[in-house]
Length: 439
Image (cartoon, rainbow, N blue to C red):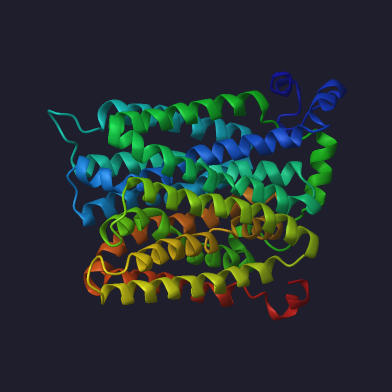
């Protein structure tokens, strides 16, 4: 708290700098790991919201009396809220600093989820309409969009080039960590206690993360901050005028389309098509998230050592193409058989869904590090906000598109479409001709 108190006495244009030797001594040794831990906690809380709520899709559909189309609209608007707010939050982060933005956004998210727990839940006398539910989820996304850019910028400031991929990948494990916890906890809460418990649990988690950020999230001492910034100067023009930044951000957004398909409708797929119960569904989604966590940490360390981020991203794209193609083929083959004649095939479908989900969820830390490095540490908030605006366009469009695809071409078409999106992302990750040696 002393670092905050002394800011009023510092130069007004450098509010993030720590100015006394005692403060520097307190913050310098291993404080960057506390900052990283706060980033993990904040992202995990919001991931439990935007990934955990879709894991309750079966209960949302029954509890709020929704059709598949209405369910897709409600879940899609959660993603649209994040998509609309990520870039403004990112620009604000580069102007205000990560501490102010993270505290404002995460604290407001906690308050809003508490309001939802009180007012936007089914009761014996009243069931909220789809419009109210969708609007509430839209606001949740608008507020939660503050988390990614602010926490990512703090990591770029605190960690050097040789550690950034590893640190950013650890931070990105928060997404599957939060999603996995949400998948394990929220469906059971929804089933046993209703959505008051679901939204209340998420509100409490966000409030705890806000308090941790208030206590520990600071920017580095002035001399460390200057060194960190000089080590990560922009590689080109400002992010929104940099074609390389737009290229990576676009590829990130495209590769998220198949990932979002798994996160939002895998529970419905496993329930309706594969005939699985709540325990198997929760375990399958949790396995996807745990596998993604492990792969993100490993990939961050691996690419830091070998300097091959672009190559790794292309590999993830092609593995995702292969996994979703196999899943679509298994679904198509299973649809030709009579129900109940191929239990092993059902298990194979569940296993392949987990594999595909891990493949398409393992690259985020590497991609965000590459993007933030291109933009430079001082403008990382804007670049990460741009990427996540495109990412959450997927969270908006995919849940809306899947019910239509189901009508036109069944679940096999859904997973084949996921493979096509990953295939389109592959060439976009190719570096420009004049920089291939650095890939």
